[in-house]
Length: 125
Image (cartoon, rainbow, N blue to C red):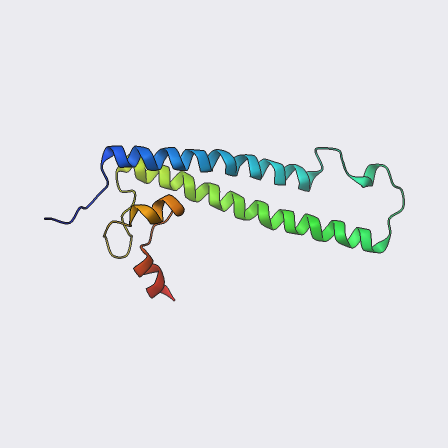
């Protein structure tokens, strides 16, 4: 039996649905983080308390920095998911960019934006 070189259209549709669900959630999470950073929700103590204890200010700054880092990671995740959708449209989704072999479906269900097989990923280290 010849080795498959790509996933069927039905399989690609299944992966597309998984990715679209993850993309929707990722965008909602990103917006939540963005609102946290910009205080667009208005639930911050900055507008009600004229004096801050030093520790509270430090915690607020740290919290903003952490939220900023999380937002950046979330934005990168969104970009990876969008790139995966492009690969689905091009019918190149699920092909390892190093080995050229199909990435197992189980891996793609767990990490739908994967571009490397486990073998190729382990060889990177």
